[in-house]
Length: 164
Image 1 (cartoon, rainbow, N blue to C red):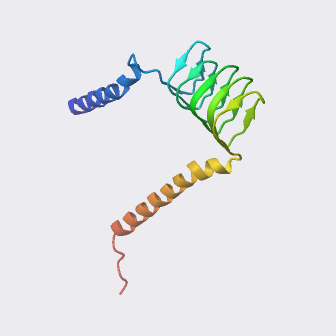
Image 2: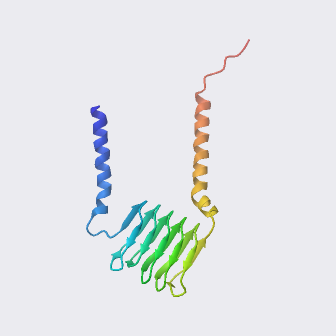
Image 3: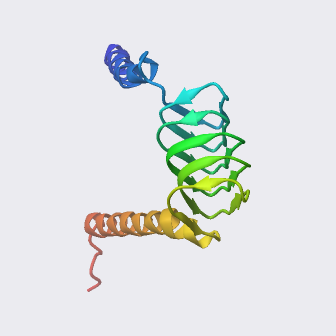
């Protein structure tokens, strides 16, 4: 029991050590899981990453905005200085929005004619791109693990008695 408690404390300290940079005063990054991120009109943020949620930008993001399974909305006078990337979600640019570049996998780009994109706009519409990017590697990994399990079972099988 004492060994289990010591292992638990070591894991807890390790997790705390990795989480401390997220609470540093100089960090202006925003990362969320399952909860939408809102960048206000008077805010300036370094990077925004969102898993299973959406990002709404009214202010200025110096770097990249990335969502996995959520939309990105750059509202009027909102700015993104880096890449705007969405996996499995849409990107919408309102009037007078300004972004560097857009990449969308499995979603669509909705852009007001007065919105500004400095670089490239790349879209891979359709859900097959998501399967190709995420599903196919997982399928290959699963097949590889199944092959290893089959091979180990075959090697550890007891010998069959021979009938005389």
